Length: 377
Ligand SMILES: *Cc1c(COP(=O)(O)O)cnc(C)c1O
Image 1 (tube, rainbow, N blue to C red):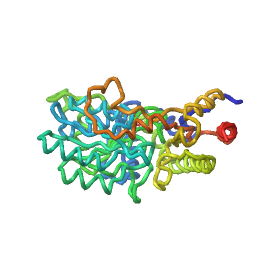
Image 2 (cartoon, helix red, strand yellow):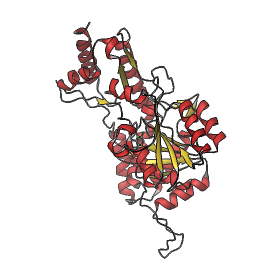
Image 3 (cartoon, rainbow, N blue to C red):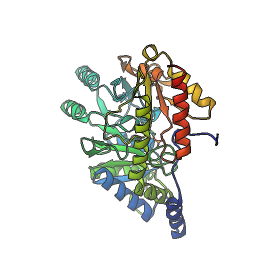
């Protein structure tokens, strides 16, 4: 064995080094500078939105989008229960209440029919729903053709949480281009990374301007430091933007690596009863993380057994996100549930999916899984 195999390690090399060095040598070692402006322009072009503002995290982008839509105390925001805590945390930062919605068992993405019913019920009860935040889970887009008309009919804006989905498409349209605004993440484990960072993208120039202002301590455009509102220190560093630009050049190649890996997993599990890959049939997925879902009765084994077998050979896996309605911190939150997210949490496992995995590492993962399956045939 040659050391541990990680789930989704950062994939950085000579190109990133040269871009970061260029930024350092330029003297723009601050949350302002030419790399930032270019990174915003390039990401907006990639996503197909008119505007973008680079920020310190995907969570900050979500927070700003909600603030710009006027979300505050007394409002509710609909959030899928199957997501990373950041989605729901951003809602709480504004003082609004997240209400959780269960998922479609095939993709793990929000159950649109359930969400639409909840939306109707809440608005009929006179509650102000400030936003809906669909999450493109593990890099597979939500069913926007169903979701967007329902939100539009209810007059509720959509903020797309595309933190996991840069590069993905839905019916040919890029993730990040759905809804009033979208949040992207460049955290260390995401499909491209700035070590930590994010971006808010939107076609709405006023909304993006408002977010840029709030992210810069709500500083008025005058020379002396004048403030009429509470702001945030949420801008991304110019040095990290340079790192992001190098990563963006390599996005397509990195997605292709992840897709190839997913196809090898699909082949490996194809003939195994009770086992499927989450959202496997989506050709637009960016294949950020591959998730195997195991029905223990049909398969005759539990996904926890596979995780233990891999861990003993230093191969990292992770459970699917623990649903928000099962989190102690959100125990008192309201939720519309079918049991699908809890079931995926119990039966799902994310497998090593990184584009930086070497061929010997991939072979080791596939052989270790084969060995596990052989022993249970
Ligand atoms: C990673 C992630 C975020 C937050 O991004 P950060 O850059 O880590 O703040 C938000 N939502 C989802 C679904 C994520 O996976």
